[in-house]
Image (cartoon, rainbow, N blue to C red; front, side, top):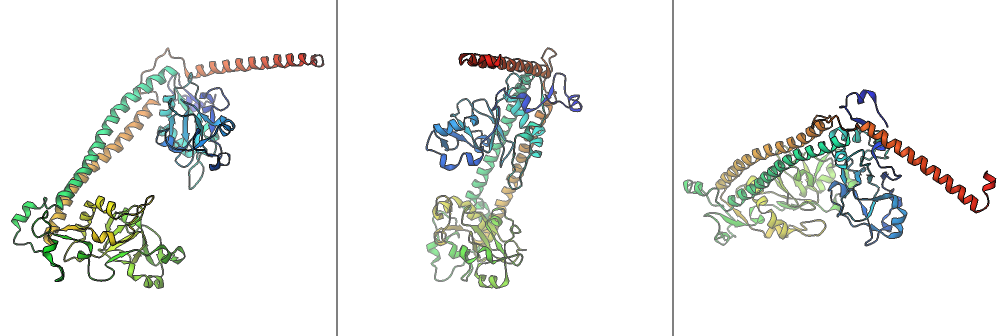
Length: 505
């Protein structure tokens, strides 16, 4: 047993600081890190058999995930790594420190190298108590400081974990703590569920705002009072304006395609250059910026560190992005949209982006941004290609989609109405997010109180954890002594049978 007097003096009566070695079952594989990658390579996998459990099973607490299996022969070879119902399983590579209890219904199998399993001694510690303790900030901070690695955090061995001291109360008090924690957590869970419903309702509200906006319903009353100020959109004489009027649109609205609303010029609709046109060897430490998908996804045009020199930029000026341009992601995460800001650094788009230079006399950038967002589902389903990675393979499909375009003055009013309603939704969303963060803090506060012995009343009749541990160790010592005596007897009997006993006596 490992105790530190300075720490133990701070514990409630009957509690003790114990290590993993103190609280696991008396068996050789009670603490077991999964086999190294060379021991269980992909060529050993079979279509069905004994399951190989992975990190995702622990992170998602779902032991049905995954489809890696090994056969009888390989399982017998790796039997020490078998995971059984009730074992504690911990992720120890990549996303580290996640933990769960292996369920009763799990398929027989082994852990892989990213997992660690613990078989606890139920007489000393409750599985649920350990799980709550291990996932608390108290222990997680110790786990994270004991990790190794840079790019991927990694518990390189169980040695560091074995040095962590766990505050362990009497077994009966553990049961009371778990009951109280679960009672309080159930209240928090109900609150979290309500907050998530609010977030879902806000999402539906925003979608409804956009739908009504581009059906003309948000500005229905406004149109009646501003009828004399509204000027229809002017199109080229070659376009029959009457043919672009849709019966389901308000008066003076037109059903237009992207070619109808972009500025004159050959680069007003431009997909980024193919990968072969802008390879990594062309990049320089500074110069003209190469804008990427993440600039649009996060609406932050300062992100990224790819640049090209002046000569390369002049070769690729057709792909230059300018302030006010609409930028759309068209590979991987498709359909995200942003407006290039006024302080944009001079540069070009890469192959994952599409830029539009709008004719501002026909449509504003802000109006088109909200309009495009409102039609996202239709755009993605009609204009995307690919299976594993969605991709708008060309702009041809996008050019065929029709958009409801209001007169410019009404566009301004629609944007105002949308932004006003969205600002209200954003305020509620912010409060909701803060409440969700607060629930996480409350969980940790509950756990902190629990592991200081302040959550439930103590019972002086409970057997102290330290005494229980010493009693179990004494029993283990007696058992080992008995097993040793039996081994000696067995050895003597064997020698006697083969006629060699006289040489020992």
